[in-house]
Amino acid sequence: VDRKLPWVPLESNPDVITKYARSIGLPEEWAYSDCYGLDDDLLGFIPQPCLAVILLFPFAQLGHIRSSNSDENEDKPKEPPKKCDDLYFMKQTVPNACGTVAVFHS
Image 1: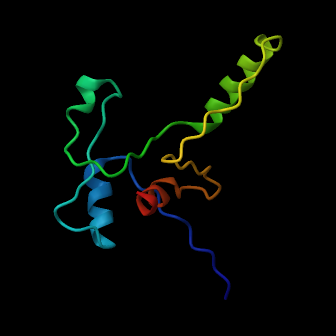
Image 2: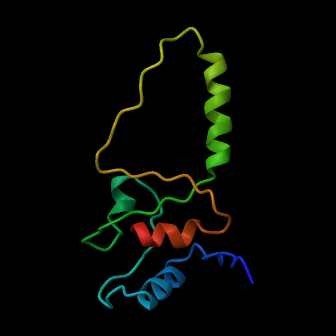
């Protein structure tokens, strides 16, 4: 019997993510926490050391914004995106897998 098991959605909640990550081997001294913003004051609330950041945003919406901005800036020369060796981006192609895959990569 060829049954495809669906990915179970992982709630975007640091307690839920920590519990799941510990169930697959994350040491007890590590945990996930919320990040309320990227300015210096809010980043100061993140426990240190911080080894990874998981960003949650609607990629499809970003693509729509990018395409609508490109129409109005057609005459302006386009700059290539800056490369960041410390950044890894992976577009989700499996439904409901984003949280689990993010934990695996973090």
